[in-house]
Image 1 (spheres, one colour):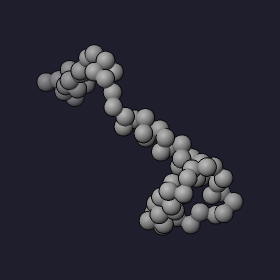
Image 2 (tube, helix red, strand yellow; image 1 turned 90 degrees about the horizontal axis):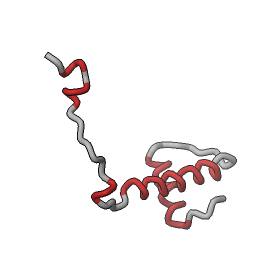
Image 3 (cartoon, helix red, strand yellow; image 1 turned 45 degrees about the vertical axis):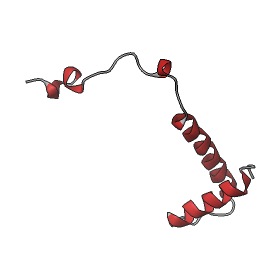
Length: 70
């Protein structure tokens, strides 16, 4: 099993139970590994960013979508 720590294993079990999932024992290690990786990626997305990481342009959808034209 992936070393995700006791806290992550408890969180995984709690979320699976809340969703009503009955995870087969033979699939649990791979599903848990995916859960750990998803948590890691979510932390990257939520991290602080400098102003230089922001996009240089802002688009108004009405200027690029035909539905916005009159």
